[in-house]
Image (tube, rainbow, N blue to C red; front, side, top):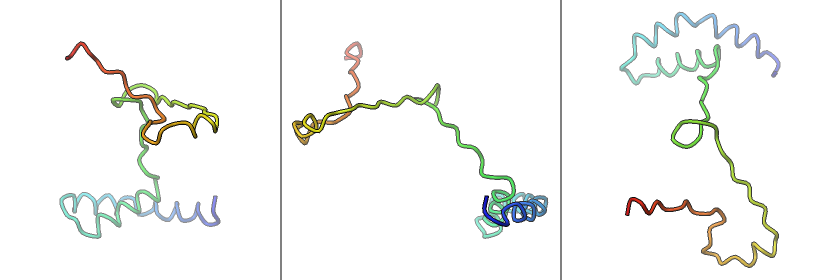
Length: 93
């Protein structure tokens, strides 16, 4: 952790009530007050967590790792995608 981080966080947290009051007063405003209040809250309490989910916002993230030899890559036409395309659903045709 950087030097002084704990002190900075504690100082920012001491302004939490005032920052929340500013946010409430300026909910529909696009003034610097809202940005300042948000910055104080983010520094004092951290950024809101960002969920990481799979396709459609549900389930785990899936990764496809494909190893190719240099000769295989060099032999690919420049128009060939490295990732396989999704199979088409012919039942909806």
